[in-house]
Structures are given as C-alpha cells and as structure tokens.
Image (cartoon, rainbow, N blue to C red):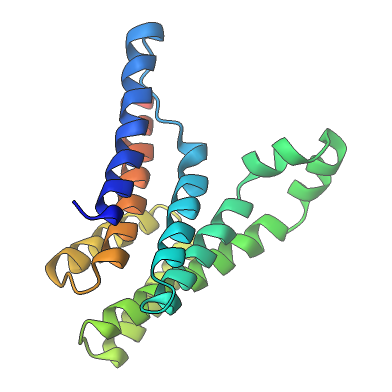
Length: 185
C-alpha cells in the first residue's frame, strides 16, 4: 500500500471502529458525521503537502471546497459562537453563501478532474452546471452526483491521489446516509 492508500484506509477504519464500539457499548448505530469534513480536510491538506508539485491545483480546489463546506455547517458555528451570535448567524445568508461556494468549488474540481481524464469539456461543463443548479435547490442530489463522479474516477483512475481523496469523501458521505437510513427508517 502506498502512503495515500494507507491514510485513507486508516481514516475509514478509525470511523468504523468508533461505530462498532458505539454499537456494542450503547446500542447506537451512528457515524460521527460532523467529523467528516475535518477528516477530509486534514487528509486533503496532507495530500497537498505530499504532492504540491504534481497535482496542486486539483487537490487545492478539493481542499477549498471541503473548507467551505465545513464552515457552512451550523454545527461548527454552534461550537465557536455564543448562543446570541449563533442565532444572529443562522438568521443571515452567510452559511448558505458558504454552501454555494462549496458547490461551485467542488464542481470546478470535478470539471478539471474529468477534463484531465480526456473527456469533452463542453459536455462536462454543461452537465456539471445543470447539476450545480439542481444541487442548489435539492441538496439530496449532491450524494448522487458524488456517486457518479466516484464511478468515473474509478473507471479512469489516472490520478490515484485525487481518486483516493474522492473515495474518502464519498465513503464518509455514504456513512452519513447510512446513519440516516438505519436510525430514521
């Protein structure tokens, strides 16, 4: 295993062990999904440090998109701000703007990643723009887009490091969906 595969594998294994221990001790099946973005952000910055000469644009776009997604979550702001300031923040559009910036950066990442793999940029751009607009109105579509993008990344494995980052993100988002499905259905 190369160091990138080891890093992604250990990240996923750590979360799986956490879930198994929680399931055995408390009888609760729950992944710590508020930690998804910090984990992916730390791993992406680690990958950026390891490969800053070769794939720095794609990894940087991916890391910036995850950073915007991290700061668009109310959970993070609830930890950092007092109750009054948190309520003022939730009344503004600031978290929504950060989520839009996440979507824009992530779709730019997806465009450049798929363009690098030899696909036609005009069709990719139109398809991604349509998905961007639909994800702004229906955030549930985002997970389906991640699955499709990871499928393309699997089929065209050109950049192993980028593919592994994407695989980690999709796996953690899949764990979030699995937690919702198991606990709420």
